[in-house]
Image (cartoon, rainbow over all chains, first blue to last red; front, side, top):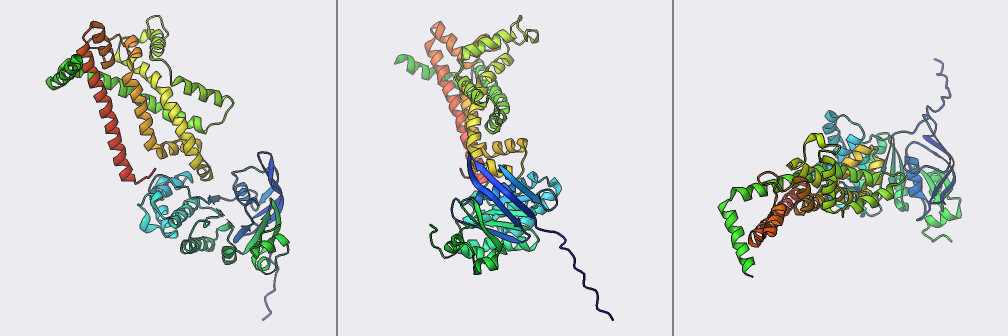
Length: 243
Length: 237
């Protein structure tokens, strides 16, 4: 029997997003300048020091901040459904369940389907036992998982996380990462901004390294952590203060 | 000193006797001022929240104007509403002058800027907390206004109380558009003004004591309701 002919099938889809010459100005100052990169499916991490422009990049990709120049070319010609988790949890003065219902309403989920979706989100974020607790009475880690569940109510294809674990203890961080991992396995692409090199090592498939508004390095995480090419990234990984 | 003691005695006597005329005056005062506060809140709270959110040319000027209108003298409001409702006025054909409805309209005009300005202020604080969050969720303008109202519900009780306080305490506007007609448009403040004019200081003071007691009771009730709601929602500040 002849061996089946091997055909080179083009990847069904290229990068999720190609960014060309992205420049963002806030009150006249260039916060991001001339960024070129590709965002791939899976989990990418944005690393960089304070003020590097990581959060601004996330907000620009979400559409909250309009770019001053450059192009964002999305795979299907239009942006995917995006959701953003902020560094500081934003909690409504309502119960966990009510916050999720509100997010579902914003997402346009029909009223009849909301109860079922709330339950799914609660399970996904390990919050079932806290469903009727006021959101503001949760612990830091629980609040951040609720934040994640709130973002997931939008059924995003791209999830943007802005240092979500910055103020969490190790146990809460792990609990949070467990949920992120579940989400990623469900096929949601994730772009995570973090300060935490260890977290980046644990989660990242690809890394973008920003320094003072410019993209210094980007590529697969394995290569980045094994052999960073820029002095700034090497200094950052070694915990040295870059000059 | 005698007058004061006598006034207290008479106030309790009046209340204890359940004097129907006094009860009617108290009832009308509450009806008019609560209606005006409710109307002003229904209009002013969404308006204030929308003003907090909206960005348009001239917004600053509008904010200053609304803030300034908080100090609108009641007699001026009374006069304006009078001109509007008097027979020769644009709404004269409605025949509302010297009716409780006219009093509600006047007090609504008086309270509306208070509610709007305080809601706008509250809305701006809430936006600092929730603005980006709501936009990130893709909430439209109406949903955002509604969300701000819900999230600000505890503070809005205080806003409503401030409005009610202004309504129940004013005398100039209801006097002009209501006419202080016995059994028809007489409320506590106009009755106090009348009794004082007649030299019936003890009666006037007794009514004053009742007025203060009513205002206190409404505030106390609102606080009790708010505390209970807070407890139910465990909402925190």
